[in-house]
Image (cartoon, rainbow, N blue to C red; front, top):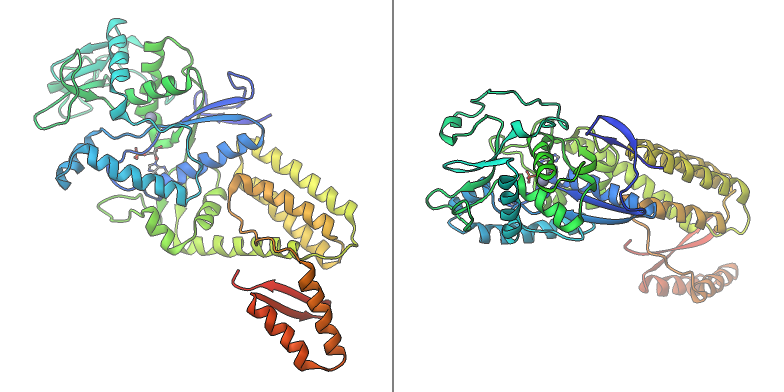
Length: 465
Ligand code: AMP
Ligand code: ZN
């Protein structure tokens, strides 16, 4: 039974989906005013691992991620670049999909774009107005926080009657309370707009996620995710809008939030110029190395990207890959199969126990490291047969179906011909006919196979792997 740490209520809870064996999961997607960076990658890789683990456990996961392609930041950037928000969106969405693919993140079942969902958003705004939860002002339509007594239940930030002025231009907005937030923004000159019963304008930021999640997944959602920065106001507002407009309570059963990624101890920001885009990252580190770095920290924890740290992860991953390759090389028929298989079963059970416990990535990795160390001991003692080495590899493949970090050497079948040639070469060597023996070695080399003479006999490897 999986337990998750639910931001709503702050407790660890058993994950019981609304529909048996099915998880409907929604994660807030990027605002596509620029290319994605490694902070996005942190959050999306963490949820990719969570999703893959849920699938590993047999759930049918329906996963939706929105694309925010109309937003104040989009308008600003499009103006700077002298293009429309649609052109800016198209350009960055293409890059986003390319980056997600490069990071081996499984595509969502659906990526709805805000600009393609305007009628559904207008409908939701109308519903909120009709039900008395939202009101029109000179510059938009606002959600009236005082009408939703549970406001603050996610973030703990309480509604304060009559307090105004959290923004300098609050008065201008003619809002009833400072905490009221826009569900529709009326267009200012030179801003992109859509027609609506409330005048020409565009959606407020939060309403899109309420609309798209309910439209594509149905309510209540099982899991809603995003990074910790979204708890307030974005997710708090999503709850208020969704529960008010659609009358479904709770809007979401389990709220999961990832910790923020910093770079060399600092927040990524324009002024520091320390944004690292995904292509920039992949120039220096492989996607598998970065995934391993993300997978080694609890998804909820803050994480610090530093090149020095990354080198450590690179070395550890290399060691793990070498372990996999060693397992692939085992040829012996003999071994202590009972001990090895017991170790595999125990490790698998511990791995699942750790992942079931709020997806404890680092503890799950501790199980893998302990398994590696125990297996290495058994390998050194000659207790691992080919059969049990294959079982150990199967277990490592299961782990990799969740984390996607290992580089399994391509399986090269030790076909009869290579075996025969090795035997023939050994005969020549016995007869001290080294010229003929070397000829066989050179022929194999030309076909990409190198021979290694070891005290345990001649072994072979494929070149360039
Ligand atoms: P944005 O493109 O800023 O709208 O963010 C899209 C998603 O990425 C949201 O879930 C954010 O919380 C998340 N995100 C943005 N920056 C970071 C970061 N530095 N670390 C972790 N997650 C981030
Ligand atoms: Zn959202």
